[in-house]
Length: 228
Ligand SMILES: [Zn+2]
Image (cartoon, rainbow, N blue to C red; front, side, top):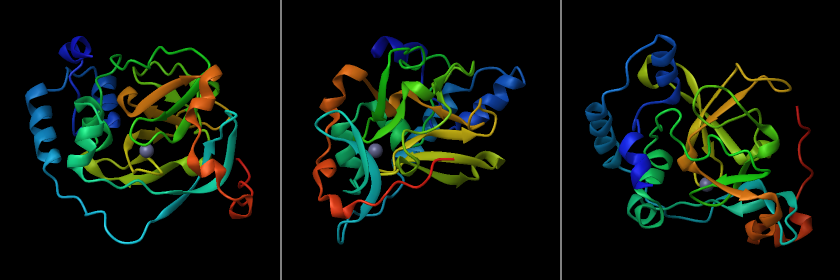
């Protein structure tokens, strides 16, 4: 981890799209000093206190048999920045909670080709599977669709003078990356991810992802919406 960080300093505060623009213009590497200044600014940003009644999200999760079930209602994960810092590595915090971006070709999951599932490094929600991972050539892990439509939330991002679509974990609101319209069939979408926002679990270990929400009463669950 330390060795990787030496050469792969996070582009904290910069969106993946802006780096792509720089790359496509044959631009030089981003200024690390400016990036770390942005990171410092972001880390002190005030966050709403997690108070009030428990909010729920409707997502798909794994059960004890390692089977994806749902949608089921799962409690939304809300923590203070101080609490997140205790649970995440500095690199994970910079991406998930401060919207940082890894340098291209640096993430540890870029060349992961094993069959399995990618979960949120913040809350463990299943987000993507190896079945939809493809080689985009961008230097970031890329997928053409999420594991379930409700598990990845999308948000318009107007930062840096561009209009992009940010993707976040639906349960903990952790920043994952962005989604673009230049992906392969069948969706034509490219979900561009930071490795630091993900944890990989191989197919034969999916029962370890068993989620309490999977054991909720069946009457609570409604049929999944039709996939595009
Ligand atoms: Zn999450």
